[in-house]
Image (cartoon, rainbow, N blue to C red; front, side, top):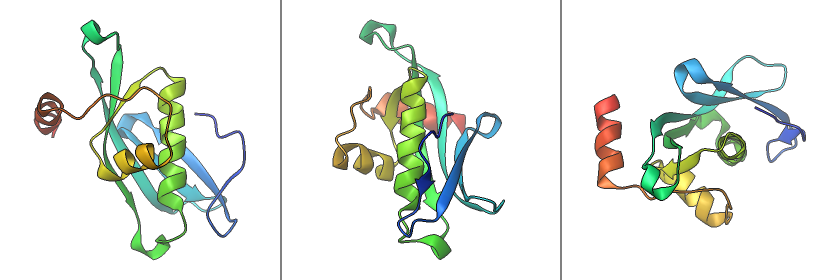
Amino acid sequence: MSTAPQLTDREGTPVVLERAPEENTYRIFYAGDDRQLGHADYLDRPADAAFGRGVERVFHHTVVDDEFAGRGLAGVLVSAALADAREQGFTVVPVCSYVAHWITKNDWDGAVAPVTDEVQEWLADQE
């Protein structure tokens, strides 16, 4: 995952993002600190070839520790996670309400698929 420009929170403190594919999550940390501040969880699923999509990245949960609320960390985390999904050619399915809100608010231009009953059922079967 590329994090080319230096990412910072609202106070200008540098942050580092990491994708942990073995745990299906993206994590955010302050630079030089190994304490995780938050994470955005996803699952990848085959998509309907009839719609020309290969794999969907279903974002289903995003959280930032309450201690760090108000610093813009969730936005940085979701922005970077969505950029990574786009770079990998995934269609995003925003089951997580924060991810869905961020996509709309920021007029994100990546591939997005709707959250359908089928997606919800598939996600429930994965847990």
